[in-house]
Image 1 (cartoon, one colour):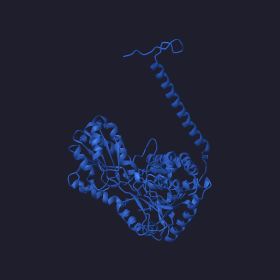
Image 2 (cartoon, helix red, strand yellow):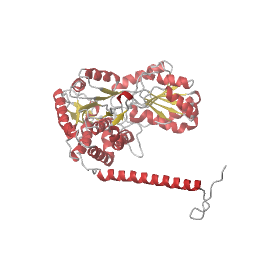
Image 3 (cartoon, one colour):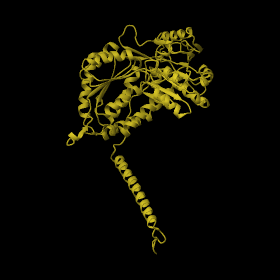
Image 4 (cartoon, helix red, strand yellow):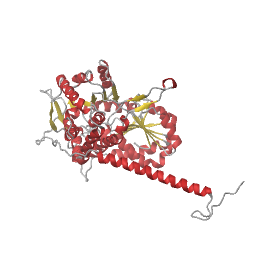
Length: 516
């Protein structure tokens, strides 16, 4: 083996050739990294420099009537009128009437959206980002006002509105601004040897005018979510909102329409309607609608799909859930933190949350500890109107949207107790001492629930904490997969291999790992 040659006198005196090669490689690598960062920074600067500025705009403030009128036995249907009666579910306060859209109204708004969409489809992604950035700036600048409107119309608390309306809407806007253009950019597809002389490219084109039928539990987020995706993709959109939150819907739609108008575009691109169920079929079967997004229950989704099948309109449905939170034995040391997560996941928006935690499944070593930790916390939850909440007298759980589900919830709980479950807290509707016309259900804890009980299989969609016992991890997965739902789930523990096995065996679209 030959010795390495030592360099003679000079700047590298005493170095071997290999030492010099290492130095040159290090310098070349450093220069490459520097140039890459410089190029990246230049590109980002050009993007920033060429970006359209955020435009400020304002919309009229939405206020409840000055004369405070409390309805007795409030309902969205009022005698003597076909209008939708709007009221605050937390107090029964009358908010106003909304005239429901007719079939002719639906035809008109679809036509307006089509006219606006033809021009909007030719806009650049830079122009579309300006609209979304302006919309996001408005939401960030008017958070408290938006939350108060959402609380008044849906009965939720301010923290529920901040998390479930503002945070998620801004996050969707942020993601679309950062990644939307890339997601919609043309992409190549590989070919085979026989077709090597051809190129395959996927090109994304606007569909035209799409529709969204959204639920009432998140009146801002559920409205703006489909609007953001639709308009960034170059589409017009007609959103059919729930009658239960008709009062705030047109106001919230102005946030998006106002951004369009401020940026010099036709606000008719976005149309929002409210109608009774027998009229909604005209929208879902309309031949000029290119796609339908539906958020709601399984029975209504079947009606939407049936109506859309006539003109062959594609439908994407986001339905209810019966999400399970599996607590492994290895999670025992982390129970204080997990308890907080379980409370938030179960009682956010008074349990009216499609991805809320509907079942807690505990393994033997943690089951009794979970029950012991949750019982006093649930018993201490304060129920009331968010707008009455103060630092000295906070409200933890808001109202339910209506009292229509109360009989069903009480029957589910009573049937479970009759079959051997233990009711530790609540279990019935709550008569608020101040807001007699409000829709409240007592935060409930029911334990020792078994898989065959109806309460373990039907979506409660209310402030009810159900705890079930599992013998082992396999049993926990079987219990989690038992209902005919697969929207979400979560698993808690300290052993990664154990959690991985659970995740692979749970049939859910979204699975949270040690969180929710």
